[in-house]
Every structure is written in structure tokens, then in C-alpha cells.
Length: 256
Length: 305
Image 1 (cartoon, rainbow over the protein chains, first blue to last red):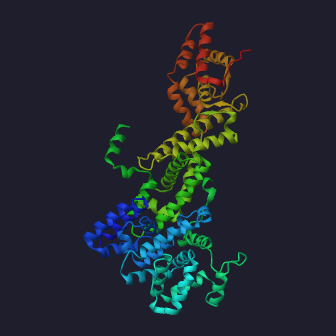
Image 2: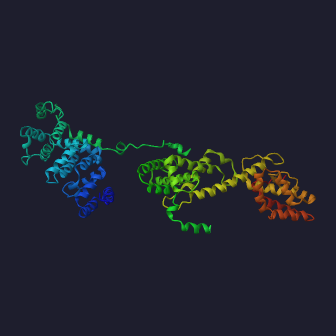
């Protein structure tokens, strides 16, 4: 492969960590002109996932980024694990909607940044293939349980012919439909993840959900609970890299 | 000194950084160094944290920075102290082989030994208090381990120079203690001692020529000395030789060095002048005693019964 790639990877990593995502993008576009898009894909697939996460999340909400367009599905899915790293316990407690909203903006932004259906499907497949990606989608769907149940019903009847339908629905719906087209397994996993009883007894779940009595517990898992779980899944250095210590530590004996 | 400055200007800065830094540079040249680098980085940070909490301040940035400099210096010292030659690669091997903590421990032990050596030839009753010992250790550590990671490192040379000078002081003290113990009128006791004073008194009173050891004296002894000198007129060099021959060889060396300065000193010439004089006056004696005090310091008894 091209000998400049390690240098580019290092430069981008440093720029992103230093907070200069704009300049990291510049480095990308220069490299793209010189070596073609494939070089960027190559670099993005080898950058550490937490750096990718940091970089991509800087471009959520409309700003166009080469990285968003070109990030390899696997690299993106891995980076999702770190999306929750910045969430604070207090924010999960007080403003779960805000966090879920930002997660939605990110996932929606990356998936729908391209018109290429194959790429969308690849992205979503890679996403449900990781624990964090799956949990992230469940979290998004937990924001609109009504719509999820509705689309689930449409999917049950229309199967492969299902479309996103009218504009009045929640933004989640197109994503759910896209997910179903990408991977049926993935869609079911997300659905069962959100409504734990759905697999055994969909009707009972519907009934329970429709019940407006406050005594009845919710049929679906709450956004807050899911956010908390997602936050816990953020890998920490000590978990990913078990350091093998070759020397037994002397502790305070170094002063003896 | 001038030649040394000339020498250093010919060697590049990187060749004279603290040994730890040079070892790390050497590591950077190796292939597959990531694992070792991580290990070393991890160990060094944990040492820095311990140094900060024990000696500087682990709650401020300055305290931690200071601890970092001390860690760099002490590990470098440990390397230099253990290795037979100044060799970056061997230093690196030692770090990988034994781990930074052990190397730091070596450096710290060297500092501890240095701190136990006296830096002045004076013994005081406070020397052995735990508080004083702790203060000395800390002062020695801070002084000889402080190293700038990006600058010339003279740490080990300074350490060696100080080691030499303190060993010399130690032998002076040992010599003085021996003299006190073998004082002709019974061992001199006392928790304070000015070693240089004891040595000077012993050499001055050795002029008497009977080989007796005098470690403490006053005006009465001085008058007795002068009287004997006037009466018996012993030859000075022979008297000193006789005195020195009674001493263990290691103390002889120390005293011979003092003797080379004392031989032409005012007190000796004055004693010789008064020996030849028909009759020394009262003021001659008091001047002589003052001169003796200049040499003997606190070891001279000032009471004159």
C-alpha cells in the first residue's frame, strides 16, 4: 500500500485529538486529490475507533465531511462504541432526550449522507453486528415506541414492499425501514431489544403499550435505561489492553 | 576545568542528555519497541507519582514536574551507578531487564549512602536524630537527582565528586575520633567534635617529641609544651615522625596532608622562635594561645585554672 498512509494516519489522529477536525478534513481532501478516495478509506479503517468517533461527531448536523461519506462501515460501527464516552451521569439523568437526539443526528447523518442504498445497508449491517451499534439503534427507537410498533405492523404485512410512507411520522421510521431492508435479523433484534416480550406475544405487547393506566409498566425499555447501558459499554483502555507486567512492582520499596 | 569545557563543546547535546533519556532514544531506534516503550512509560509514571507524594507535591503541577525531574535524575543515576561503562544500549537493556523501579532503587540507595556520609568535618549531637537524617536524605536527593530531561546532565559526575569529597571528610572524622580515643590522658568524651581542630592540636603537641597523643588541650598544656621545647629542644621533623609512627596507616595519610600545611604555619614558627628566645614574655604566651585557638577552634579548653 502507499507509503504515505501511516504519516497521514498519524497527522489526522493528532489533529483530531488536538481538536482541529477542520484541519484533519483538509488533510483528507488533500490526500484525496493526490491519491484518490481509496487512500482515505484505507486510513479511516486503520485509525483508532475512538479517534474516528471524535472526528465524525464533530461533523454531525449538516456539515459535510469527507470522513462521513467515506468511513468504512466496520470502522464506523466500531467508533459508535465511543460515542457515549462524553456523556455525563447527570445529563443521562436530567436530559436523556438531548443525548438520544444527538445520537440520532449522528447515526441518521452518517447513514443518510449517501444516496447509495448499498452503502446504507452496509453501514446498518455493520452497526447491528456490534453490541454498541445494536444498543444505539434500540436507544434511538425507544424515543418513538408508538411509531416503532406501527412500522412493525406494516412490516409484518407488507414485508419487502414496505416504504417509509407519509412525512408526518417520526424521523425514526425511514431509518427503521432502511434497517429492515438492510437486514431483517438486525431489525428483529432491535425490535425485540426495545420490546422484550414482542417475540413471544406481540399482541400482548400492543395491548400493554396502548394501556394508558399509569400503573401498568411500560412495554418497552426506557431511553434513559438504554443510554445508561450504552455509557457503560464504552471500552476503557484497561479493558481493551490488558498490560502484561514483566516486572513486579516494588511500590514504596523503591525508596528502600 | 578549561579543558573540560572544551571537551563538552565537541560532543552533541543528545550524547550528554540524562542517561535515561539516551536509553529511551536508543529504544526509539529499535524495531518493535512499542511494548517495551509502554512498559517503561508506565513504570516511570508510577515512580514519578510516588516521588511526588513523598518528596514534592502530588497535588500541584509544579510538584509533579519537579518529581519528574527527580525521577529522570535518579533513574539516570541508578543506570550510571550500575553500569561499568557509559553506554546507552546497555542502559536500555538494564531498564528492560530489571525494570525502571529497580534501577530507581539503585539510584536511591546510592543517594542514601551519600547522605550518610558527612558533608562537614564536624560532629554534633543532632546528627543522629531521625529528623536530621530525613532532612539530609531529602536534601541530598533533591540536590543530586534533579535533572532537566532536555539538557546536559552532569548528575553522575557531580555525584562522584561529592562522593569523593565526603569520603575524604569521613576519613578526617575517623582520624579525629581515633586520636580522641587514644588521648594520652584517657579518651576524650563529648558529643560535639571539630575534627580539623583535633588534628591540628595533635600535630602541634606532637612537637614535644615523646610520641604522646594529645587530642584536647588548653593554655596549661601549651605552657608545658613550650617549657619542654625550651628544655629538650627536640627536632620537629623527628618528633612528627615518631608521633605518626604510633598511628594506623590510614590516619597517617590524613595527618601527613595536614602537616604539609602546618609545617610553615605561624604557630609552628612562633613556637620555634620562642624556644630560642631567652625569656618569653606574658604577651608572647597569650599571642601563642590565641594562635593555638585559631587552629584548634572549639577543641581548645579556654578555662585557665
